Length: 412
Image (cartoon, rainbow, N blue to C red; front, side, top):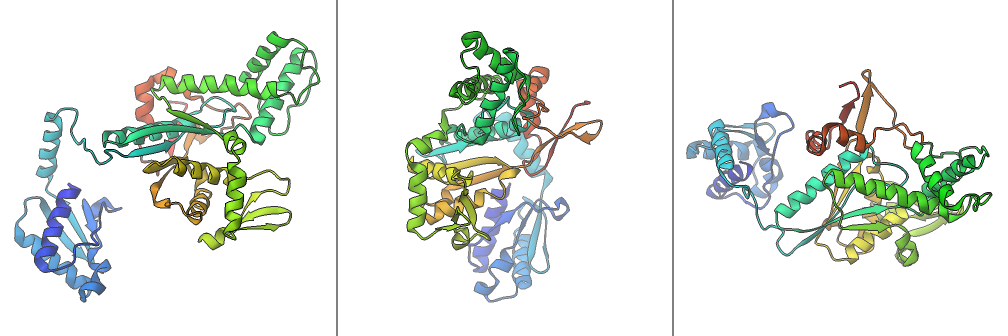
């Protein structure tokens, strides 16, 4: 319907001798304002040489005089908006066509011979997937399905970090539970993980190696075993919900391939790096952002922005036509810095499409419940799938706009 109205509008503009390049048709925020709206009169007023209200009046008169059956009502609103309501019979006729058509209705080849990389879920292997991850998973998979429907060759990618502090603390948490099995009680590390799955991982190590790693809390076996165990669990959950990834990208790869150092050096070559208070800063203000950002702490540990910049360079270097990132609202502040850096490194940042979704709020007795993987206080995605099934779960996560919060009521 939007395309059909746009055709009517373009025809009227041509008849009036108005330019047809800058034409934007949108759905109004307030449904009382109609089905579609355009601010064409305001953004073209200077070029046409007339006040917006005069342009709007001329367009409305021209469309009304055409007697087009698509339009139920069209009006102009100061200072120069045009609002339109579509004839309800047109909607009904369109729906009938859809119902009577086969399953290929709406399919097209917009993405023919083009490739798209869609990164989503990307939860670190520190615990089971939660209902919070579920929204990201289904939104990302839905985007993939839409792109595939439009002819794109899709690569579903899962990015994970097994190189940072979270994973180190995970290994230390497993070690504490391992030592419990040997009769020694140690304190869970600060920010450690307390779920029952940590005990299960510790028992796997104990059953295989007995006392071999007693007193050796820094041994990599604790982190590695935890990562393997949790990732297998994550993949099983994703499979339950009908989701299969084409590639898994390990942040360690960026260090092994010297992509982190290369990124720092390339930013430095463009005078976008400086040192302050013992830390390395990205001069984001020179790239259009409101403040500079630390990318390497004074301890020498990178902040998450640095590997994210390097990772996105890798995405571009793989020559995809479209790159889609699906993030939760907690990335709202960080991703523009990454895109600013990418653009500064001479990549075409217009290829990146970032989708930000709001969080899932878990309610109990009508009150929000604070979720924490570390404190083992979460609702696993697995439990939701087991309770209501895969199809209902998928519908639950896409039945609301990604821009609105989604409530998960434990009492229902």
